[in-house]
Length: 274
Length: 113
Image 1 (spheres, rainbow over the protein chains, first blue to last red):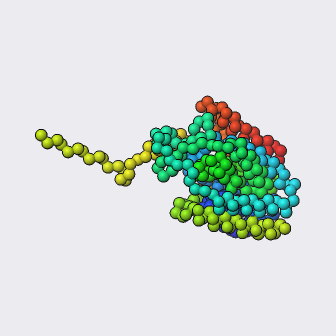
Image 2 (image 1 turned 90 degrees about the vertical axis):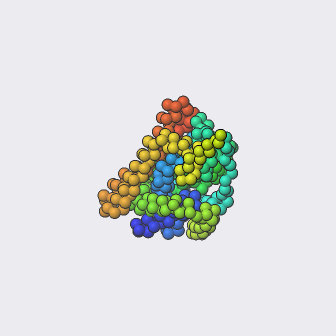
Image 3 (image 1 turned 45 degrees about the horizontal axis):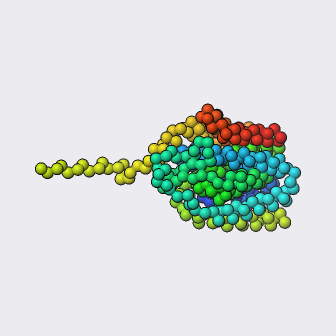
């Protein structure tokens, strides 16, 4: 296991890049830990601690901004958490080489998602300016504020989106990544929810995914508390820094850089596991 | 008879008109004041606990680290429970049941581990 200062720096760098690129820090962190020679059985819980810290750090601000669709998030998470439980329970029986391969492929999928993510789909509709902003009770629709204008949206292709969520949960439980790189595209590209709402909702549900997996990892005796705390310190610092930088940088460029980083990481992890 | 010139419109704050959505955002923020404050408090607690775990000697630090993980695990579950209760009370049982289902899956996972 790397020294505490190295873990803090890694946690900060990965959380910062993850926040900038909108793909989550653990997607970068866990493959990097593997590349540094950390056992996958210990790296996955560290990744989940990073996810939990990131979700908590963003929670209050996203709640105030009205971006999180809790009903959609919990609907997605009901299916994803089943996958997470199965993945986390199975992870002790899957050979290390295969765990590393799952992580490598997950990093590649994250890279593709980061590079291909699209911009704004839903447009402001003036007649909604007098309607309440946020999720609409009893439905999977809602509205949010974009550049001072109200943008309504509704969710489509729900069964397909929920199916992708099960797979995302399975990968999360197996590999210790938040699964945001799959859940956000599932919501935005499959379920046609605005990217900002999808990303905020994913951050919310990733906290639940992390809680589920951490409970299971704790039961399996896989938590390294000191190393985990170092990662949490780094994740809080890096997440805050990344969120501040995000507003001043071109998000598309940063996402592409992050995607390129993930390709490199995936190549290293997959190369070591072959 | 000369008519009095019309009064000029009063200046908007900072020279910009306030958008109707800003009022709804403020109302929403007030509606979620309790969970928002709770999340801020939990974040502060996590930051302190994580720093203490790193700084203290391993034996004591590990105990604090367990509390840190407990907070990180507990906060999202309490947040879900808050919404389940809220939706049941406000007549949205379908999504309240979905939230309850999520909590059940988490509990089953913890028991199986």
